Structures are given as structure tokens and as C-alpha cells.
Image (cartoon, rainbow, N blue to C red):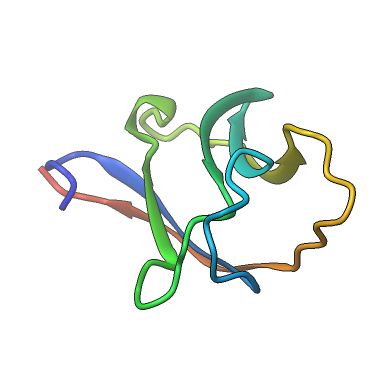
Length: 98
């Protein structure tokens, strides 16, 4: 559970693969002002409740200021024959009250 006052971006992420043998190739990335602030490879096994990812964005948020975030998928290594269908479901921002 996040500490009081922390702000979490919660994402529901999944894909069609159920294996982590291809780690290090394709990544989800979260950017703030074009700077990567979080990344995770898509080859993680996300079944059985692991579909939800929580990212602490407390340091990116200010009182009453809008926060512009970009979520993208990138290949860090050349991929010749590894198609992937990803699913980005619900997103929510949760702020714990002090």
C-alpha cells in the first residue's frame, strides 16, 4: 500500500504471451515531459492478478497542476519474428490522503 500522500498511477496491462523467456526486447515505458520515468518489459507473466501495475508518480505531481504522461511500447533490441498484441485496460490515479 502506498504511503499517505503518495500518488499512484495504476495500469491494467496484459499481452497474449505467458512466458518470460523473451525478456529484454520489448518494453512498456511511461514518459513525463518526454523523459522515461518508468519501464517494464512485456515478457513478465501477468496472469493471476499480475495484470495490475502500480507506479509511484508522487514526484511528478504538484498541487493543482496538470500532469501529462505518455505510455508507449518500444523495442530496445531488434525483433525479427516476435509479434505481440498488448492490451492496455483501465488506468486510474490514486492519491492516499494524509
